[in-house]
Image 1 (cartoon, helix red, strand yellow):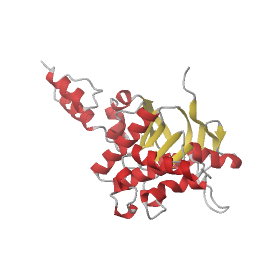
Image 2 (tube, one colour):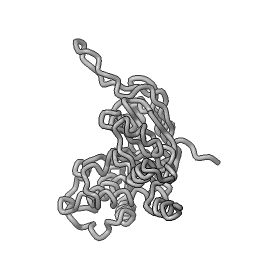
Image 3 (tube, helix red, strand yellow):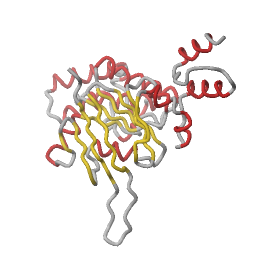
Length: 283
């Protein structure tokens, strides 16, 4: 049986409201539609101003569509009575982990969400231990969050979302403020959740290399969907991506430049391993 959509976006248009005397604000998202199925890992990329972060807020019912609909597991974000259930079904991880950490001890922070849900104390203890283990932060459970690195803080923030047992995690540029090591830690954690726990992931980012293992990528440009498809399909569109101001994965860029020098390499290479193999096979 085919997996059902957990996120359904249909004919979504959004512009920020204005007061009576102000000119109308520009449209931020313009009639976009897409679904994300249960267990899928979907990446969303786009230049600054493309509508990525606005989309994240619409998926979490922080903003409400101007036109069209956003549904999370069949629940319409316009339905005020469903907002708590929507946010419990699709947990949100933001750019700055400091904005999500609320307690002075790591394990208390992870326990905060389930406590507010009324989960029994014994079960909270189990969830905290399990979620910290899942994100590789068990040894820091008695630490103070402000003593952790950026990547470690973001992993604690993810554990705090996991403890509320969502079916989907929406990540809004969670690595934007991290150094390369912190980014690797977070992406490794997210991929593990998707592969081992079959958790649905919607990952909004401007780092292309974070999405080479995604199931599908959606490219936004000026509020519209410019491209979508598997990573190899999207990243092979080098000229299109560059024309809208986006970088491309390092290996894709390397093979593109080698081909411009006269080599004959596939244009959809993403990983170091497959690029090295293809170069070795050149005659």
